[in-house]
Amino acid sequence: MNALRHDQTEGFLTAGEPPCLSLYQPTHRHHPDNQQDRIRYRNLVKEFELSLQQRYPDNESQERLAPFLALHEDRDFWNCTLDGLAVLGAPGMFRVYRLPRRVAELAVVADTFHVKPLLRHLQSADRYQVLGLSRHEAKLFEGNRDAMSEVALAEGVPRTITDALGDELTDSHRTVASYGGVGQGQSTMHHGHGAKAEEVDSDAERFFRAVDRGVLEHHSRPSELPLILAALPEHHDLFHRLSHNPFLLADSVDVHPDASSLDDLRERAWQVVEPTYLARLAELADEFGSSKSRGLGSDDVREVAKAVVEGRVSRLLVEADREFPGHIDRGTGEMAVTDIDDPTVDDVLDDLAMLALQMGGDVVIVPTDRMPTDTGIAATYRY
Image (cartoon, rainbow, N blue to C red; front, side, top):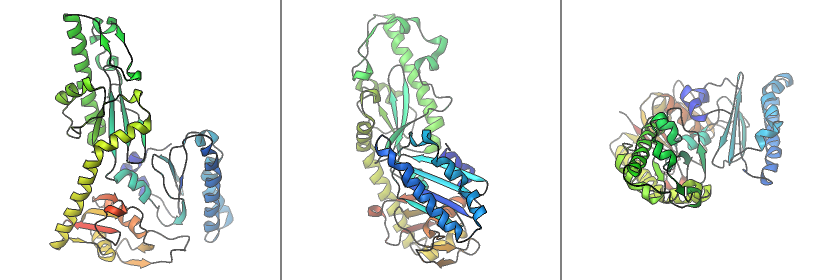
């Protein structure tokens, strides 16, 4: 399984040589719903076959389809799917991504990869992270308004208090009796007095500080996502007082993740992050309106295409569900409109998003009801 954020950073999403095969489909997490996923996938691969046969000899078509067909036969893979699937293939390159967000079915052969659904996952303003914390353990989750999943903590982030303190963990912390488990939503009760109780509290504080440092360095700064604390109420004040994470939101979720289903945790987290999300979208819309009024922005696709190629776009807002069939001349920015039924069609908005990223611009995929234009695109210029 490939790491989407790493592949974007390394440029793999734009490295494919034509023909570039892009497959997307919604999938299911659980039996029996996931039994239909392999069948739907095979039907999409058949669409590839039809498209390739129009352009390439049969032997070349089969060679290009081989990794897609091998994935179809991997039953272990199909038993561990999430809400969406993206598969990209080109000569010498094959990438598979499980997505925590549903995507529309698509199988397209073109000169470049169709990556807007992946960019929506990477660049959407509705993404956030949740730090699940107790006195003894830390967990990290990433989600959006639709889905959430646990993510592995990076090396350098302690998962347990033992990881953080090691030999410095006080004996009193090992021997203090605990009653009630966070898994039942109950607070942990420490039976001890004086110095021993203070040592236990000191250990917890040092653990929280180590988690805060690690999450900031390895997760929050690289992703720049809002962070929500999910912990029992008695831990909120301590963690917020000692945290130096500027991405940590003031409001928290009053439950440890072990005492909540993933869907319930997502709903609670979204209630916390939604005001920030809406404010962010409003800020982006206001920024675009102000820039356009000063001649430093445009919602005309042809004008924006030329500006992107010239490296003048600092931020590009792209409507999530809009497609604009056509091709971009990457040297001049000239745009040629194509037939939407052409099996080799490119999406102009998709290509502009990738070009803007390559030119150092910021790209945000925006839901239709929050898009500040009716053209599917809004660009803010550097000059």
